[in-house]
Image (cartoon, rainbow, N blue to C red; front, side, top):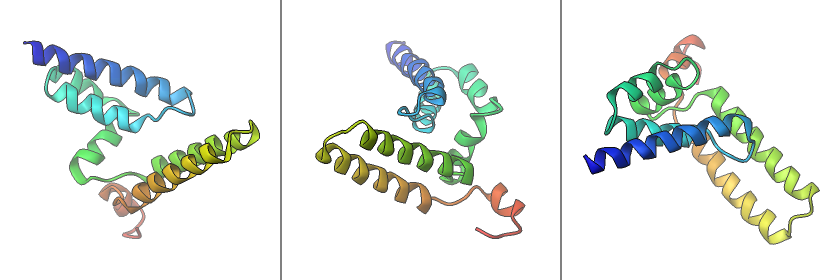
Length: 130
């Protein structure tokens, strides 16, 4: 019971952070959704079903679970937000060390994103072109 409550708390917190990530450019959405889905799978079938059935968030989680895939739009948005975040750091005069650290992390995350497969539904819709 305690473990289930712990997972439920993680899921609710992660969902809240994901929702905030939709409007706050420095906060990612998808990783928090994946954590929430993982936690809800262990604590609340009802909340897991809600998340998977959500029109906006459900397909992201389902694609990752089924294929380890990330869609083109999610990739583009993530890279654009990282670039904008780095640019804002430059404009606001962050130190060179912080900018270099950000750039290193953002490049690594971008490489990870772009090396994941596309969801099969996107590949099929594009006529088999990756």
